[in-house]
Image (cartoon, rainbow, N blue to C red; front, side, top):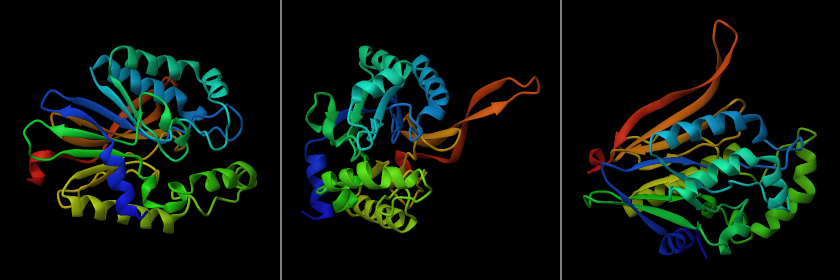
Length: 270
């Protein structure tokens, strides 16, 4: 099965949600929540993540997690991950209880694909019928991260996980290999253009705001040093944002939100 077929299959079974002037969505991906050991890249940003989710909870946003929420290649058990990050899971449970949490699975949490509440993709259906927004993780762009994901999981779990602790990056990862990153994003952007839709993915960990000519956006990730990035969709407009740590003159630490790039509204593509 080729890339286009893998994408079409994902969206054939996608969850459909409404997109109108009242819709408020925050899209995050690639949190890679781990078990608290040295290779848990989420742990250092959990404070920022919780601050951001509290901000969106108070403002009526729905949280859409676009895959690789939990690191289940390097870790076998979700139980240990939940034990290490109870506050994050409690926050997600608050969103779920309010009917404001939906999740897509990615290659690193592919084992969730048969669990209730997890989807291969989500389509935000524009109530005005002008432009729908397609959401998925983006791992479909590479055969080793989709069809043969179990092979890649084995290599990460038993080879690259240990080598990365010595400073050797995984050359098969689209997030850590710039050539694969470029190839992946080029494929995803081409698919969006060919299908005349707006496409938002994660997977490569490189945030992308999109333009009025390019219909492809990327959420980035939650594992950058001292910052996370995501995409807000509000009033049928798309905004790439970054949440970071800052310090005040009195030496207190705080979390702040910053807009990256330019807000793009759906009507500008029509």
